[in-house]
Length: 321
Image (cartoon, rainbow, N blue to C red; front, side, top):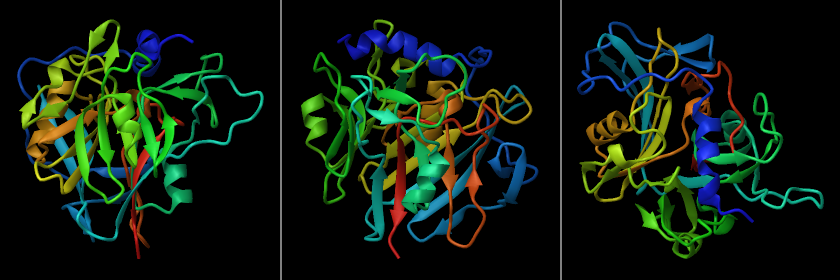
């Protein structure tokens, strides 16, 4: 079986080349107050609600992100989750039921993050793992598309995807069964012994990558994938005490809405939100943010494909009644 880290250059091409790429803008992003509330969409072209200030729903706080670089917009959503609240339960896409004719490396069948949130009855969800297609790899990503997840993935103590074949560490967000959280570079065996795990990419094209934020420092320049190129991006972080989970999705590839961010810019956003550690999750057309408060309209990002892309795995928050 080919080693997973050998396939990652193809993975990066598949996930990040579906739109023209921008260039790294000079300097750091500048922030200015939005002149009007941005509109969230359940479909990219149909606004459903507006937000003028952060929303606090029990243990979850959601706020808009709006910045400009050279007068070009950067928009997205951030959620802070109080992990000490006994109502909070972290969920990760679970293992599939395999069929006799499934490809040998099959670890997941793609599903959109909003669809997963709905049948799991979650309040908040974002996309998670990078993944490699196991079908012909042509055209749009169909529902139930067979994929191989990149990096370790564990759901409620069940291993969904093993780590690197060479045993090297991957950047992971990991939870113990009692809810203790950490972000670190962990080898496969250590990751698989934990209760919930999602991961970013540790290597592609012969280049090693690590955390997005480490010990309160911006390490985005050495992150993956394509750190100096603007893309839609998804990230997960933790505060220094490990008690607050920070989830961020930044839109991109939409010049009049949001041009996307580089990984150093994404790391700066995480730091401003209070992250002491953070990892970059899958991005590009996969980036998905869905906040579904009870008895209220959903808030979502605007996916760059113009519709939700089915993804290999998602990370979510269930709030117990």
